Amino acid sequence: MIDLVWLIPLLPLAGFLINGLGRNILSKGLVGFIGSAVVFLSFALSVGIFLELNGSDTKSFIVPLFNWIKVGALSIPFSFQIDPLSSLMLLIITGIGFLIHVYSIGYMHHDAGFNKFFSYLNLFVFFMLLLVLGSNYIVMFIGWEGVGLCSYLLIGFWFTNSSYASAAKKAFVMNRIGDLGFLIAVFLLFSSFGTLEFSELFPKVAGSGVAAGTLTLITILLFVGATGKSAQIPLFTWLPDAMAGPTPVSALIHAATMVTAGIYMICRSNVLFSLAPYTLDIVAIIGLATAFMAATIAITQTDIKKVLAYSTVSQLGYMFLGLGVGAFTGGFFHVITHAFFKALLFLGAGSVIHGMSNEQDMRLMGGLRKKLPITFITMLIGTIAISGIPPFSGFFSKDEILAHAYEHNKILWAVGVLTAMFTAFYMFRMLFLTFSGGFRGTEEQKHHLHESPASMTIPLIILAVLSAVGGFIGVPEVFGEHHWLQGFLSPVFGDSGEGEASALDHSTEYMLMGVSVAGAVIAAMVAYFRYAKNQYVPQPDSGNRNALENLSYHKYYIDEIYDAVIRRPLDIMSQFFFKVVDKAGIDGIVNGFGRSATEASRGLRLLQSGNTGFYIFMMVIGIIAMLVYGFFKVHS
Image 1 (tube, rainbow, N blue to C red):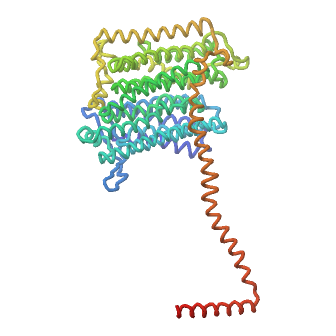
Image 2: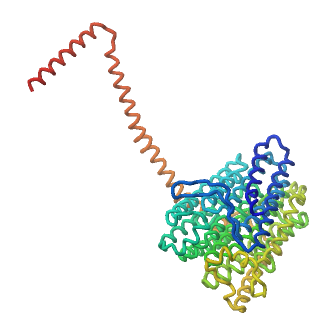
Image 3: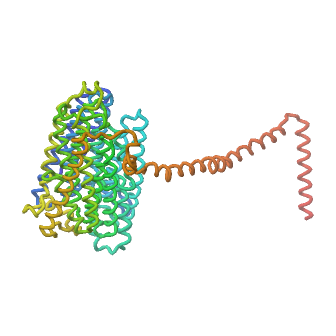
């Protein structure tokens, strides 16, 4: 089965080619079937490979496809690596991807670009699979750039809206900044170790004698790449704007797959990062700062997708916190659980938007619980899961990250718990504003209000089940259970020096769990009394918000700061170079030579008068000049 791994990315690529080339010929039903079927087949193969790997004594396989680049000492084969980490990512990408494809059949059914949309989705899945399957940094980088391209195409799918097109360009440009750091790190890795193959590189690192400063620089540059793709400070502002894309795009790219690429890359490079403790401290601090900042912004947002967007940024920060404190298994565990409940929440939000005739403002919703019962129940499960309330999935992964943070630094743990409380508050705020109280929309919206079709609700139900039980793959040993995920990933993270949460005594672990759960429940209750019982609805007038609320609502004016500090000075500089250096300087010199030639030719052409007497006269003058020159040369 492992030898067939090449079929996993090939099938979505085939779907892209069929749907893309036949988009003007094939029916929507056939396109939806082909687009979903190829991803399902990839999922079936991924399940087979996972089962074979789990039952095998060998936990890492290299599947060579062909020799790709061979220049001097540089040898880059196009090959795939199958190990516990990549096999789990295959299940997430193809499994969640298939559900989102099915959901998109109902959500995008009336869109004129339906066929093109499915071809883009298939192309994205292909590149994401390439990213996680690559056995070296170059194949990973191809997938890395490919998902960036597909993100641009899908965010700007409705490109006739200029603000949506601008959001796509913003995502593309900000990702390129991070990608430059990644690319420089790859060059440094090759110059330092002579290979980019994971199976050759990582064993070399520990005994290579390479200076610690070089490793620190390489890992910092890799982290810069991760901050772009996984939306961390300072490269996080593109992700909330990316909500301009259709909701299935938000669920697939900005919840379950693409934004976790940075986490995957650091997990894959755990050997490098474990030897660069300074970088790990930076990762933890940046991750926690991003988690806290995004959570405080989400508290005041009124667009249902913007709340989930900043929630995604915050949860990604939590994952980086886990990686930074050495909890590689815990960070990746949160990738898995987050894929379940955040995909569920985004698709649930899409169901609400679909029922509300494309309305996204929560202030104009309310009372949807009876009209959209399946959507409400599934989103309730997703909200409980992301809030870290047991026994739902988010509790187990968050608890593991917080336990490691407590061991590493008590301040990191305290801020992490506070961030978790904010998460519970803004998520239950979103739930109550959307589903409780009376309906606040228009009569026309009320008349058309309806539950989504089965193609949309069935994926919601499946994701709700996964969000409820998915955490049991990592039950902490304090409950007398074996941590299955840690054991499964140990071949990948075994050499990273990952600390064990069980180093804490049981009473401390119970205390940490109690504090985080109590905080989440208290925050949920505050949201309930404010938005459900008292039915408070945020007002559009900024005069009703205090200074802190206004700062949060306007996202700390970070976009405005970037605009003033970075964009405008660059615009002024570019205008200077255009008008002074380019137009007046370079163009002036080039055009000056041209004008000189033109003016000179204007004068010289007067000599060509056509008068024979004038020509004879000039010949005589020329002969005399030559004789005079010869005379003086002889007597000099």
